[in-house]
Length: 377
Ligand SMILES: Cc1ncc(COP(=O)(O)O)c(C=O)c1O
Image 1: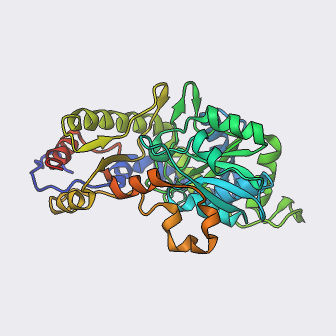
Image 2: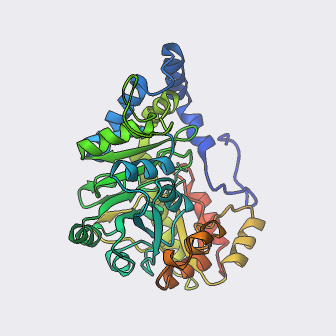
Image 3: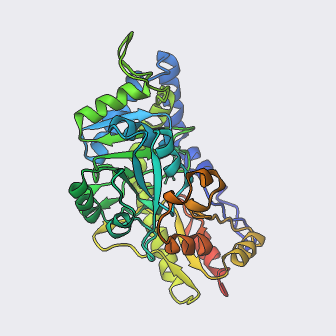
């Protein structure tokens, strides 16, 4: 927006603001593009290795393995951990569909667990409810940018010999105490879908881990099962991160903390302005954890009417997510075994959640305009 332009009440408020982010970053992005085209390092190569080193250091883990998407990261991390056909993986019933699809792509079966009524997150108690003799792993989805309470989940996993994979697709830079998402499980899957807190200019993903063997297996599986050139040791996939996306991600990573700080400031503004509106509930954040607000969800009894009204005022919203996982026609063939317990909290979230505009580049004026149209909710 040009500085001369004065915002009016009818100016739309966008849901994502990548155009604003990219306008400011254009010189760095152009430089990254020219570097890759100049070197022809399009598939894996130096840019991918450099980004992997940078992102592993950022997350505080020994290894980062760049892959083609967050969905691929989940599938490959599970495969690398030896989770596959015949195994069950506990997945929260309230998440984005790709969490469960990654499990299915690994050949395993998702079993849906309920989530915490307040935070919408999987927790140790709800995971324990769906544990069976076939359970091999737990997918701890750090939804909306808030990390799951991992201590209980890890204790449960330790007692039953389960692999804990973080789905950190929405949680780049989130933390619990002094540990960042990516370093809270046995492995972690990240997405760099463009609108994520750290987003590429296309698809991208990564697996983070401290486990040398897991990282080595993941490197093989993403690259046609190849250990060394010409030596194919397993049935791998073509799920590599490409050099251009890695170079763009390297340009953006130094800005991630600033972007997250802006998201947190916007969330604090929303929280403060929404507090008097008794018909809306905001996301509670666990003390000691740092939420990076990939999304800003509110709960509201008449969600659809509110979304329609905001839309008529030019305010973009989203629904993250509805229906709950076990109600997707895509998962019908999994049958009742995939949802053996009540998933009432997941259903309640699906019925009531509405995401308000959230992005680092929004202005306080835009946040205030959104809130001005929330009442009566
Ligand atoms: C929670 C969650 N898991 C997994 C994914 C899958 O990531 P991708 O779209 O990169 O495959 C996403 C995002 O799209 C997500 O939000």
